[in-house]
Image (tube, rainbow over all chains, first blue to last red; front, side, top):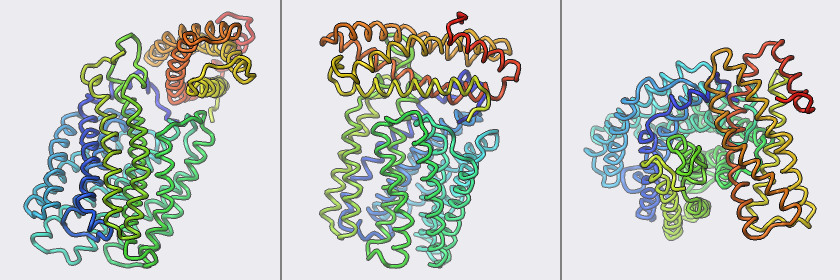
Amino acid sequence: MIGASGFLGSAKSRLLPASVPFRFFVAAAVGHVLLWGAVLIAANDFPRFRGGAGPSLAAVHLLTLGVLTFTAVGAAVQLLPVATTRPLAAVWPIRLASWLLIPGAVVLIAGMATVDNTWMIAGAAASTLGLLLFAALLADNLRRAGSMPVVRAYGWAAFASLIALVALGLALSLDERFGFLIDHAAAARAHMILGGFGFMGMLALGFSHVLIPMLALSNAPDQRMAWFGFAAAAAAVALGTIGALRDVIALQSAACVVGVVAVGLHLGLMRVALAGGMRKRLGLSFVLIRFSWVMLALTPLATLAALQGWAGLGGPTLFGLMALGGWLMTFLLGVLQRILPFLASMHISRASGGPPLLTDLGIAAPLKIHAVCHLIAIPALGLAIVLDSAQLAAGAAVIGAAGALAFAAYLASILPSLTSGRTRN
Amino acid sequence: MFANRISRTLHDEHRATIALMERLEAAISRRQPINIADPAGARLLADLAAAIEADTLRHFDFEETQLFTMFNSVGDQLIGDHLTEEHSFMRPLGEKLIAQARAAQADGFDADSWREFSRSGAELVQRMVVHVQKEEMALLPLLDQTMDDATETRLYEAYVQASQGTVAT
């Protein structure tokens, strides 16, 4: 568990103004709705998407930048200072980062959707600056944190991946106009691996070592196994990135094999955390989290199958869906529905007195609708890719959009209390 | 696992409390009044009244009179203040639930008494889970890090005596 003298008493001093993390969460909720809308528009091409500007690329970036990155930035800037007991060095850089990152992502994704190089370059430049500001805050907090060495190691790996990710992303956007990259497709593959597994993956795995034991009320994962898991995950990302950049199938396949070890160790640690946890009734969020773990377990196998050509023409797209949508998005949405009311409760007092109850914040019914829709939409989209069916992809997108709207409605139900500082009851 | 006996003991009590809260949560979420003719329902009401009275409230008292005063004496007042404030919201809630459970053991539930019991129970479950989460994450590791052997022995004896009812904490 997080050993931290004064953890509780001074926790409020490490709270950011609610508007800071919540602007990222609202942006992620909007991105989530737009993502499914973009999949609907791109339904004809999406099942065989291999890259290149257009609505499918916009859909992918609505997922990676619009949902995953916004959620991760909002959660990281608030949860990391609480977990490490080190406040952010200053609040203005993250506010400035939001003003660069969110509009920058909008311009970048609009440029991708309309195949407009100027918008893509402008959006990529602004997003890059925003992400670099976030990276600087992340690094500063990790540098000052004294505890949780494994979580810090994951954080540093995510930081290094983020730097390489944004550099490649900017280069890719410039290459659309100037054509200076020797192998654009290889750089795009490396960009995807660094984004999905390096930045987002390492953050998700690292934060799991804090969040899952906290939610299940269990002991911290075994440190020795956690270090082995980290080493395997970092090695898989490094092998996969180098293999993708140099277009060496053997290296990418080796990354999958090492990835299987990393996933096995991680899921083993999570299983022990849940089995030993005091809390057995973990609710709807853990239905999503467990589903995301199944997707995580299948990801390296799907990747290997795609690399070896065993997964058919849709193999690479299926791998992308499994990793980014099945694992990361599902995991983050599961975690987000738990931390949204928790973070809101720290800024709100109860109208009838005392600290607010989490059930006073937000209406739970939309979360059930979201979970059902999400758990139908992701497998349906996977099936659409396997069958190369535009109709099925469109159907999955409609269901996914309904779920995304429900999730947005849940977030919207929290905001009135957050802005007024009081619960309704 | 925690090194000192105080942390281990409080951790064990947390485990028992959460198990009881989960039984209560499961009963409330069925949305049907607990049937006192059903042995499991009757056992839940009996366990609830007995555990809140004998364990939970004593657990709070021990923390406030022994542990938080110890932290205060070394200048670390914030954690005790925060957890004491949470106790102050849960203590009357626990007492209300004891009375409601005992009344139901005798007469069963009608629609009104079930609604009241469900409301109190749901609030206690929520508050207790968050409270235990905080104590497990912050208080018990802090005890492990800061307590010397002599203090551990003294406090453990005080704890044993309090749990046997020989000394009022």
